[in-house]
Image (cartoon, rainbow, N blue to C red; front, side, top):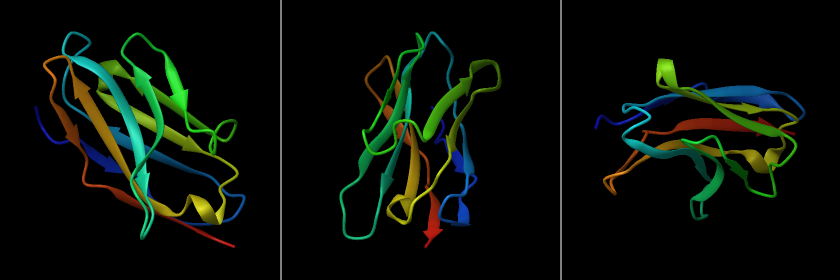
Length: 116
C-alpha cells in the first residue's frame, strides 16, 4: 500500500475553519478504518477522529461538535472539516489508513496553526 498524502493545513485565526484532505490507497475490501491524529510540540500523538469502513465514526472529546470526518471511497479521499478552531488545536495532523492485513500507513502530516 502507498503512503497516504495529507494536505489542507494552514494558518487560521481562532474561530475559523479548515478542511484537511487525505488521499489514501486501498478499497472497501482491503481497508479496516481511516483516521486523523495530531501531534502538538512536546506532546504525544493523539487520535482525533476515525471512520470505519462500515461508516462508524468516533471523535476525541476535545473536537466533538466542531470536527467532522468523512470519506469518499470512490475517490479514495478522506476529509476532516474543522470548525470553531482553537489555539489548542494547533498541531501537525496525520492521516492513517489501517488495512485488514494488519498493516497501516501514515501520511507525512500537515501543519495546522490557530492564532489567538
